[in-house]
Image (cartoon, helix red, strand yellow):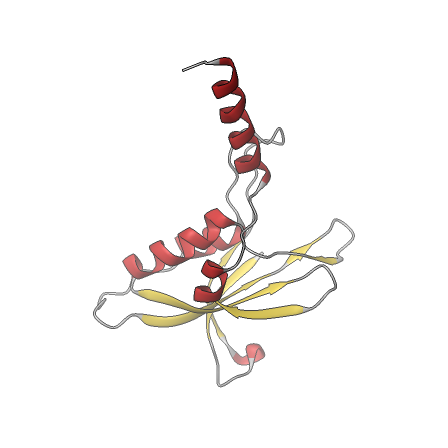
Length: 141
């Protein structure tokens, strides 16, 4: 799940929630794209009328197992690109991204830091890359 919010005086508990997103799976074979929670939350942001001054917002992304255990929710490469491109079109700029790690901690980072770090790819993009590599090996255009 993901929440896009204004930071409320340094306290996440008092932050104003602007949108809420959840993962949406198209299918489970890994060859059809799914919508990740952060992209879903960004797409649901209400566009601002005045876009001269982008409104600074933060994202909180949490991933829970089927047994409600906190798991890593670090945004994938595609989500990082979406976070950089889509919010400005709606009048927003993502300042901080909070995500859960595999140890149950909440990590705070900036979008610019995520853009510079080594990225990971979701199952769909890994499968798509493998499919394209196989096509190149057999000469299928």
